[in-house]
Length: 343
Image (cartoon, rainbow, N blue to C red; front, side, top):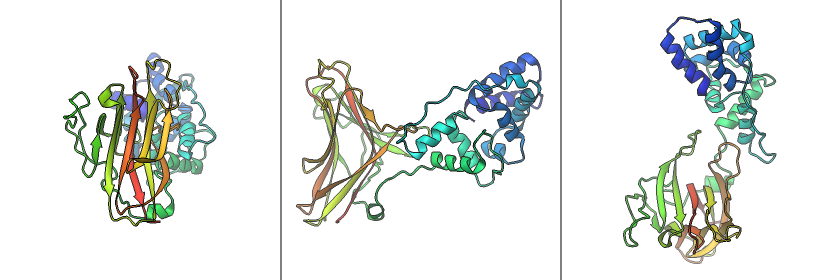
């Protein structure tokens, strides 16, 4: 599990069933295990218990035998060297707080929690001091199964008026191309786009729970200082309100601003309806979000409300970078977008 048990599994598989208890071997063998676990001896007892955990986690029996043989014979080498993790902010999400608590006990807590939460694992004993099994299950649930939306119940139950709201597609634009040939190999069904660098990428986040995302980048050159994706939504009711939510991450980077780096409008993201902004974020150099401890990949932003004045409106997600700068970029990552109504 994470480095210690993955490394140990590879070592164990190469050694076969032979258990080595040489002092120098065990001292070296336990270094990674100690670095990855707050309570090495307690975790070894947990691994050797009849709880089905190691089977679910895919940990080889010879790995457990070798590790715990060294722990048992040389307990002085089974002392944690795991560094402490900074506490999550008071206003952090349940997921962030759970991650901080569990990362102080074991490296790679998500992998541990995925196995722990398996219904076949017996949860009568916790491998962590001062964390009882019931609380451990709660923490793991908060970490592995965080709420992926804060959209209201009414909006959540309503149909999403956007087509392809999760930006399923592939490829990217060619921001180095000429003004009339920037499309590159971007394939983004149901959406139009303009300017800058736009690409579809698989989320590299360790939690792997968000899937694909749309990335909007701007750079300092004239062709790349703003970009957008947009879609025309039809069959709207004039005089009725509509709600827009976005699941996003963002950042503003500028390395040579000519004294403009502290200006709040250095980078800008906005949601526009027929060219008029209904929401705008302006940020200075070095600002980014969301400010979450773990994972730092997305936040729900909304609802942003507008009233329909026509039966169709073009909704645009625009990312801009201040003109006249010589270096730097801005970034807007969108995982999904939601539009509901009429209200």
